[in-house]
Length: 321
Ligand SMILES: [Fe+2]
Image (cartoon, rainbow, N blue to C red):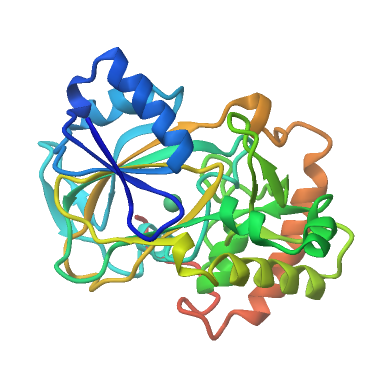
């Protein structure tokens, strides 16, 4: 196995001369160590099947989901891909929302541990995925900012981020990711396996308790701007069919990149659940959940007025997709 750190970046490595579909225990041990160190691993030319994606993900823990299409095309029963979804559908609205920086599943009771994407069909232009290392960003903060944010937390909700980023107000249902809950998480995260601190922010974060709405927005924006202010912390991946990317959601942010939505873009997505000891905020049944629910409802009320100029114009899709 060859491990090559990504050039001129403070994180990420390319791993070649290994078959993820057929790993031995030694190789897995090396990959796990490499993963913790570099945060992002690129395995080119793997061409994994759905089951092979699932099996590799499961070696890192229990899955939130495994081998599902992250696509703008409908998957047919025979496994082929058919019509391309309209931009107006909720699925595409959600995909477009993910073009803003985020960490996966911070809007669920337990935030994600790590995630994996494997490319099947990629457009010639655009449609990449970008990553940024929030460990390096935290380490580079001045001491006064570290002291200020060390005890602060923010609520996380993807109903908030959809509204705030693209003016999309999905139908709220308990069973979907648009469930009306918001989960409070510290701005500074200590990685449960490495002990390294990072900034845990991104598009889902809002409403820092103890700060005014304006101060909270300003602080979250300034922290994200700081994270993105150094190119050595940012890696932009241009997909090739067969690539598999595997990353640590506990210390990186990522975002999808725009492309011509009439062209096919099909990736297979697998997400490993966070360990409850380190990634669980609380459950909806916990009394602590009420404050998040209230904060989200109040925020959405204001955003409904403020987001008419954004992509989806403060609307709810009429599409049943
Ligand atoms: Fe994501």
